[in-house]
Image (cartoon, rainbow, N blue to C red; front, side, top):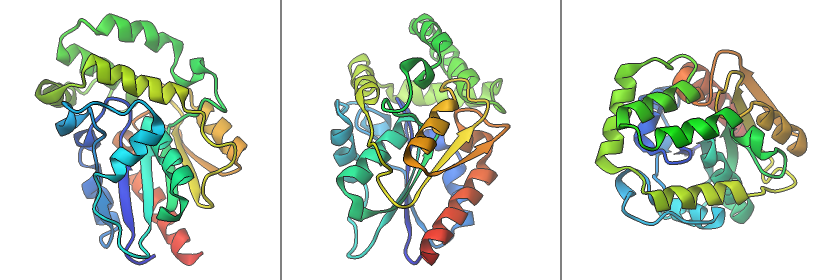
Length: 253
């Protein structure tokens, strides 16, 4: 597939720097690809801007942050968690722009109950962490989202630094939560080329959400037995190879 563009989207309240070294690893795997990591309004360097309060508005916001599409160019969206919902809505609204969609540990209201989309134990923990120092909050996030880096204090300190430089406001947090919770998702797969990736030891979102989505859409679900919610952090090489094979398959279709 010539001239492939890959747009990497993070999840709720996360920014492009939370990808860490993953974009570099993906670039090494696909050296000819254009890789972009836009931030949603309200996150990262755009933390002062109001977050969209609907998935459709999030799609238009993200599209405004990438380089203008060239004639005949299409996009492969690779997205984790809430980013996967943005990718799904993007495919619904602008199907001719997308060549493919990879959703990582995402979920849809249409296929999964709320207590699968966020594990019940996380609700109380999240409330308890609201008044804690930044490092404690980011350490909590790592424990719930990573299998291989759950106790990585150095990484938690880096993430705490991101938070200090520009944490999402309470209003923006609520806007993003509202949009994610309310997004139903399409009844059928929004594209011909869709792949779902899941970590089997996801501590934040029940991995059953990926299975339910795959069954509902009748698309492939690939699982890694030693990865949590942040699958690109836990198993970057495996995810890069999944993306490489997916892009190659699109190029042959």
